[in-house]
Amino acid sequence: MLKNPQTSSTHRHSFLRFILIFATLIIAFYATTFTPTFNNRFFPAYLKFQANISSSTLNMLGENTHVTGTSISSAKFAVNIVWGCDALEPSALFIAAVLAFPAPVLLKIAGILIGTFCLLFLNLVRIVSLFLIGVYYPDVFDVLHLDIWQILFILLTLVFFLIWLQWITPRRTLEVKNVSP
Image (cartoon, helix red, strand yellow):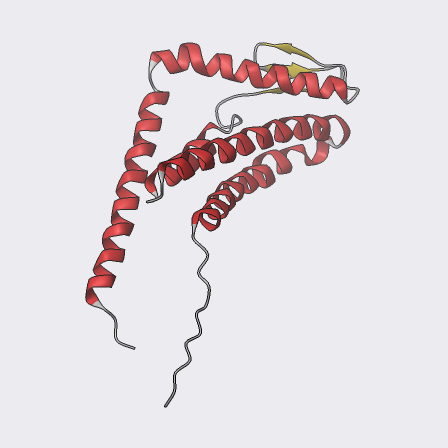
């Protein structure tokens, strides 16, 4: 089968455009995270919000927890939510990938809203589950915290992007043509 050089060039151009936009957005994300406004106002408030929601969930599950700043503690265990435990980086990667991909704006907005919400929700599940693991199975806490959940979050970010791609890609039906000799 002969390759069409124009199609190959178009695909290469599209891929390079995606990578350039994606990289620019990720650089912008990290540049923003180093600003005083982000570090002194937004980020601490965001971490406290996560701690409060996680603590409320744990209390509904029968754990007697309280929040001090970004720490959730009980008589049995304590966790502190810090950079990297917040789902901002996976969310930024997901958002950058969606924005960099050539698709209609409304599909991008829907994907960003749904995918980011799912990642942030799963991070709350992560925090609550890690707290419970720390209380009931402290021997496996570090492995689940540092190895399993981190890898899982990276994979989930990729899976959510692939699901979004599947959702926005038009379904192509196989067209059968009757060809007579």
